[in-house]
Length: 146
Image (cartoon, one colour):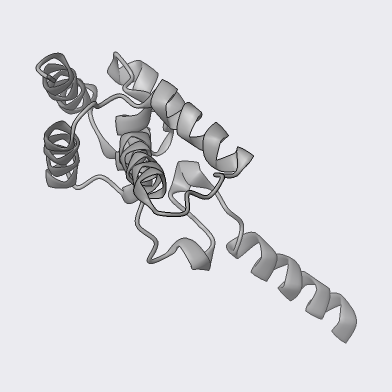
């Protein structure tokens, strides 16, 4: 009997520790982690690449580095530091979870319905009208990029 109840307790503990992005439930190691936008990662990688190119002994960058740089270039939604900072500030003001913030900025959904389909945690936390306004603000910032 004792081993049966221990097994049930273990199962409950495992279920409590499950990852579920739709409920904003993440593993403990991500609790204090900061999220980066694809555009921010792209800027960091470009900076690292230029540092490498200007070094006396240029080192060959790994294939993973090159693929990641290519990916972030392709999927970066914001082209300059000012726009990135502005979008991040806008989303922080809206009290979005870090996961929601990065997901909205990286995916740039066009409608509140699309945003909620891609990021299920938004469904219970934000009304469509509020989310639509946020998405329009992001789109405005994107349209005024240099």
